[in-house]
Image (cartoon, rainbow, N blue to C red; front, side):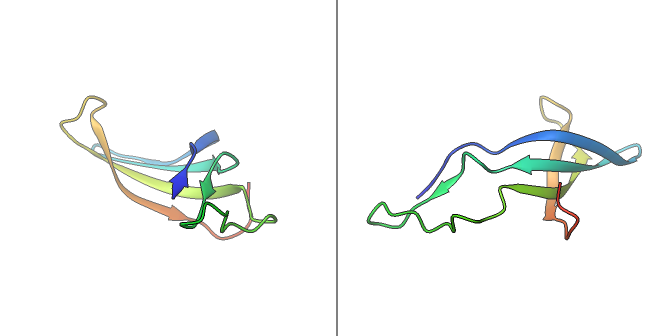
Amino acid sequence: ALSGTTTYDTVDGVEFSNDVVLLELCLDLTDIELTNSSGDSVLSEDREVRQRTEVEFHESATETGLIIVRSTVLPEPSC
């Protein structure tokens, strides 16, 4: 089972246009836990808990006016 909350602490604007926003986020996965059916963690104790991620938003008829269309973990350097 997957539990916990993913947060972020830094945001860099990469691209802004009329209907596309592209951001680089530094995700913090410290609170995330993944367990098997016995309740044992399947995550390595030395896993990376911070991931540099690129997120693409498009204009949409949502409450925020944007919708996430793509999220990609970026290679090193980590954040």
